[in-house]
Image 1 (tube, rainbow, N blue to C red):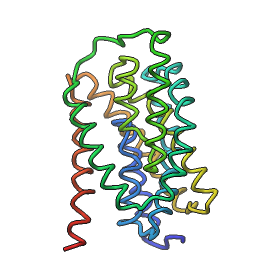
Image 2 (cartoon, one colour):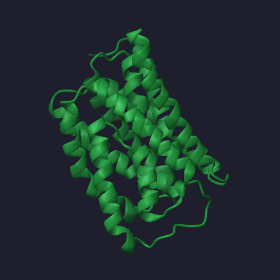
Image 3 (cartoon, helix red, strand yellow):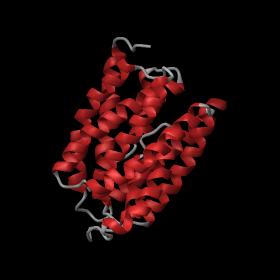
Length: 260
């Protein structure tokens, strides 16, 4: 349902936060978007929030891809291979996610986020250049892309927090390049999920448009921050893992407070 009055401003501001996260760390967009839509903007249906956030995150990811591309932080061939492999997984995963209880999904997802954060902190390293030439990484990029797409679709997210470490693992690229490259897959996976949810009437297009408008502004600020942090050893890894841990703990803690 449309969000009247102050809700429209809230949607724009929340969209700015989502766009900032996507451009700064390559992920966190849908993880932030869904709870913001539910608890701040006022969308009542969790599945409607997931579908709407997928539309907004997809558009914001593609918009925020531009400043990273201009800065030379996008590895296009790796981006196309990874995204193409993950589209099928995203469609199948989103179909399964629509039929799953949302609270159970969030709990499992939060635990997965903590594991990924640990792996990111453990694997910190500074700029030594991308390690592996693309022809030797194609099978690994395809396999990881399918898995990341499936999980992204299943949880109704763009999957940036999975895609960034996935790209680093599959191709050996540095985190700043993985962040820029990931935005293409985030946009593609989220668009696939959004299409699946839209087919079931689970998208609020007005709120999505407000989120997209705010996200473009936040995205340009996030891209600037990413470029500045890229020169500091491990800084982006720490920021990336920190965001994941904070949101994961909140997702695990909130159901307990409501049950009490």
